Length: 176
Image 1 (cartoon, rainbow, N blue to C red):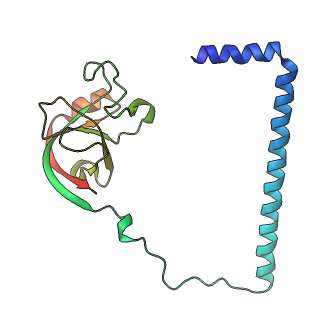
Image 2: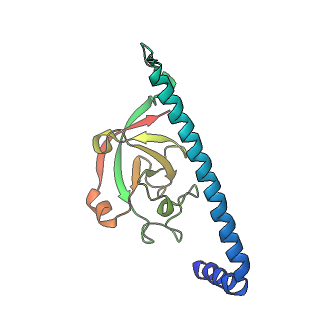
Image 3: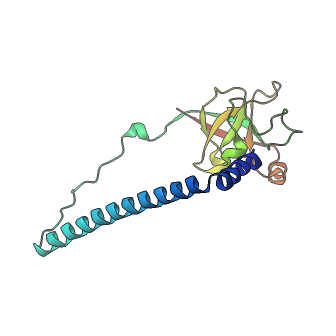
């Protein structure tokens, strides 16, 4: 795919050199206009700041800082003791599309180790594994073999780390 795209770009460059050159000049001119506009706005802001300093104006801070609403803090809906294992996007551990979870999410492209597989939780459920990961939040995006009903499988990038993780029994926190 990348080779094809690169080939098309090269073809356009050699077949229509004037169009490409004009397009590049147009983009550069627009970038210059945008940067000049931003510079003038920053200059205005700086001048306003200086004029308020000259008038000895002081900015008053509110006595109390605003608090986040309690609904913004994720509360624990339930806790459960489960076995935890780890898996990777290895074809031996998955089906023929190892990077794609049961929800269609591409863990390889995403790259963050925040995906878990669980059969007893709905897709999209957020959980914490405090004993091993502190306050890190994981999202249920995958399923396991149907024989595992009381287990969570944590997706990892590195196969050796997943093997080292082994099987552990711990408490999970199921969030709202």
